[in-house]
Length: 312
Image (spheres, rainbow, N blue to C red):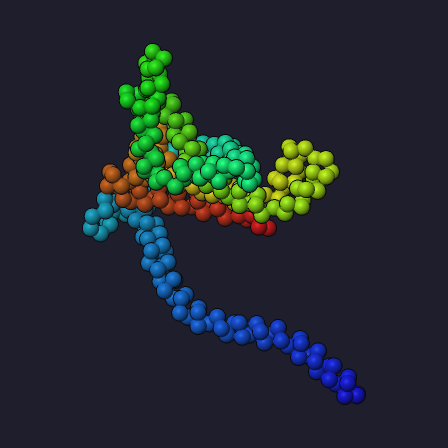
């Protein structure tokens, strides 16, 4: 073998070994970071998440009021009481209704507005800010504001009805209407968050693709249906995921609006946990509700990510 051939072989071997050495050096460089930051993070996660979850699961098997040490073991009785409770059934239905409205009304509205204000036209930035402001507002504050708006004596609704000489309705006091009034507030409160997600997704689309569609003679609706929407697929799936998980955890806004009433018609799973577990000092029962909510959220989250987001 000539020297030239040997030098070429050595150079090739050296070039092939460089990525291996680079990966080894990177792995060695990560160890100090892992040793320094991972144990505190695991400790905090264990103390603040894992242990409370384990305690809640343990307390759910007791009839306990929160004082002293739980001693009265009741097994699965708390879970049986949950599923035989009409208010919990209503809470499940309400959460399902919130998820349905969030997916079928809130997200399409956010997508439509995102397409309207994503282009660099005059005033688009101001409209983005206006539409996003409700999401910035605290949930409790939003609930208090809308409770005043819906007030049949002094609120905005009362003023409109009185202007036409009619008696104003008390929507939040009507068990047949209260949940629909809350759904309107939910759409108003959270559509801005989804709109910003869609704006980010729209701005990441290559403009040359849309220009090619224009050259081919595609209409606005055809460009949206055949080009824009497929390219926004991952953003839409992420938005739906946030909407579903957030709908299951809704609490802060309902409490100042109705507190779960009237007649438990606006209960969600979390307000049911608070009203029937915490305020009534039935900690064992409330812990069982928390375990059920945890199982529902984890099951839906992992199932959704496995089925719809596995390629994202």
